[in-house]
Amino acid sequence: MSEINNQNNKTPWERVAGNGLLSRRHLLGLSLAGATGLIGSRVLAADASRVEIPQWSKRPGRDPSAYGSPSGFAQDVRRLAGNPNATLPGSGVSRTPLHLLQGNITPNSLHFERHHAGVPDIDPAQHQLLIHGLVRQPLRFRYEDLLAYPMQSRIHFLECSGNSGANTSPQAGDSSAAAIHGLLSCAEWTGVKLSTLLEEAGIAEGASWVTSTGADGASMGRSIPLNKALRDVFIALYQNGEPIRPEQGYPMRLFVPGWEGNVSVKWLTQIKLSDAPANFRDETSRYTDLLPDGRALQFTFPMGVKSLITSPSGQMQLRRQGLHEITGVAWSGSAAIRRVEVSADGGRSWADAHLEGTGQDLALTRFRLPWLWEGGPAVLQSRAIDAAGNVQPTRQQFQEIYSPANRFHYNAIQSWSVSEAGEVKNVYA
Amino acid sequence: MFTPDLRVAVCLLSLLSWAIPGQAAQSTPNLGQAVSEEQLQGLDLIVMPNGNGLPEGSGSAVQGQVLYEQQCESCHGAQGEGSPGVPALVGGSTTDTPPLMTVGSYWPYATTVYDYIRRAMPPTAPKSLSDDEVYQVVAYVLQLNGLITETFELNRNTLPAVVMPNRNGFIDRSQVQQVRP
Image (cartoon, rainbow over all chains, first blue to last red; front, side, top):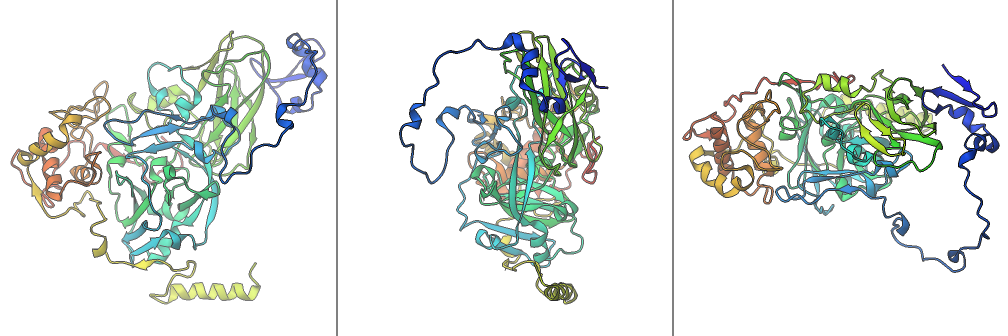
């Protein structure tokens, strides 16, 4: 499908799809002379001033500190936090600034938040984890006890079931990638396998579900099937190497890889085995997916295969024509990401993006593809495919399945339009 | 790494642990402290659809109206119609345009209303209502939806028997874990 475009017989750009998508392979081997050849008209005027040694190179800097913080010049890299909720104190979200981050790992201070009754201040010395119900021996664990258990570290994404729900509304809002998709983060989580603790308590005959309850004001509860709990669920004590943050459940949270974030119950204090789901409010009234006929899908746990371009993305401004890198993240709650395709012409033609990362199950995968913007209008899209063969749907395909009112589990292809003036906007294409 | 001899010993030990009833699990430090279900009754707020977990006590809608007006009405409205940012509790339909999903039109189990109010409501003081008061408020919300009469006594036996209109409105996808619809 690829073709060599020798626009002026000097520049060996290999166009891999329409509207300027380029082969990354050729770009990497390209000489600087070749690159400037094509965009020569955009070369900046020469600056003849002397290059001086900066002031900060002429004096000692700050002392080491006990706990680091970002540069004062990078203070715009922050979560998008909503206003305090007057009727439901502490309930709300803050969103990860996906468009300002790189790589696959979300720093702890920027991991998204969703709380139903605020963040409790829990003294770990007084916190207890109770395991009971259909077990041979109900058990109580202290935080200090769990620190002594064999642990595992896993890199996993976490996504709120309501993430990207803004794009289910009839008109596309003029929003940033963070505002639409920022209820998504990825971290290395370390903790104790739930199966280890269940083995210690002894699973009684008839147990088929696990209910988990947090120690927050809402005592948020969720039910998951026992077979998932025994497969890969763990009790996370560390987040990117340090004790998990209060807003992520300090001193401990359940972590349920690949599944809607709400089941990874924070401030975990109670695990009860049962022969049926509890049908908590947050698995009946909420987090269920309404269908056009008025019925609803319940316990739709795995997050769908999904991707989005984080740069260029909504509300950004392209300031020059020429070479840009299209980059973004892809993930699936069912498997590793196998492939991400990118389009610059609204889905008429696609090219495979380069994937970065280990191809790890249920983790974010960064993708990249060079793009030559020559000043024309474009619609940028990405489409992810996971190792189980799931393909990210178009918005129309998603909308055909669900009620227009359903805002959960939205995983359709994101379209960003680029105007001739370089303005990037959220659109439905 | 284990030496081969140690590996054999570990294998034998783990086989023994399954073979001998009451033997402690071998892959854990066994630091869990035994507790009894009785000790956990104050902590465990889970109410199952079959009524399991419902406490003693009772309440009616007549009693619940007083409490509702004091504790719930300012946010959920006099008739359970809700307010900006606060869900409606009464009426609606999942097939309206737009759909209105309330306790009456959407919630599949009356037990969930008890479970949720007892653990999470009112938001400024969750778990402040007594078990009887929760029965009363649940009764009033059900009565506003026309599901029980004003004097019907809700208790651990009668509450699970209240059949919610949308009881059969959910499709269980819990064992479908690979491909979304």
